[in-house]
Length: 52
Image (cartoon, rainbow, N blue to C red):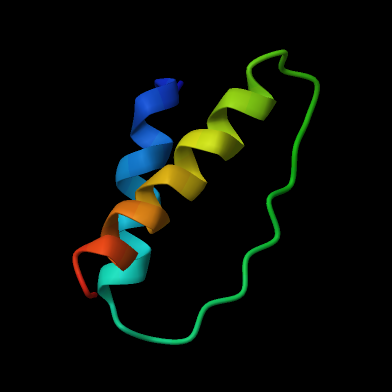
């Protein structure tokens, strides 16, 4: 099981590759899904601000 904050790190790592990216965020039945998606997008935003 991943923690919600882990999704932010995943977003950062993927964007740091410097390659075009397309993401399909497949869900499930977890009530935490909206927060996990939000954290994933925050990770990408952090890298954008850092110029990556």
